[in-house]
Length: 136
Image (cartoon, rainbow, N blue to C red; front, side, top):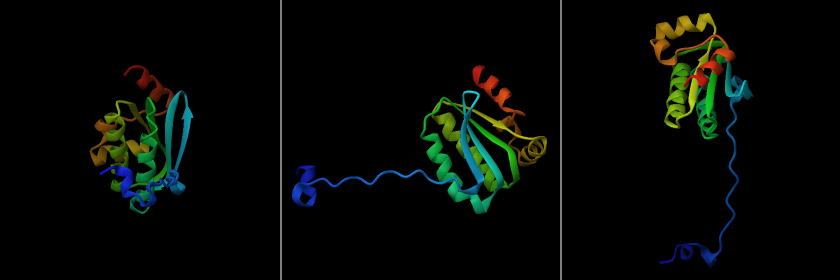
């Protein structure tokens, strides 16, 4: 059976255009210092997880050579938010791209308590993240 015979009248219908998931009120995307920067801000928690997860998945699909997650403007991040960052990191690494996290000292304490400090290995700013990408 020919695959076009499955369509009524053997005609092809146009495919709907893809849409870019909205990040909600908790994320921005930008390019700085040669890096694709995911700027998470505000509360990153269970309430914001679903739209952020979908948006982060679409960001990985861009296939950039290097990604940075900037957590400096987060006011709160819970274990669900940290798991989103870890999932994003895993997907970025699977695509063989560079990855870094930028965060403030208060977030470093949270990462240590959560047990993810060594995994995420954050840096204090974008210049340090860019240097890390050069050295990879």
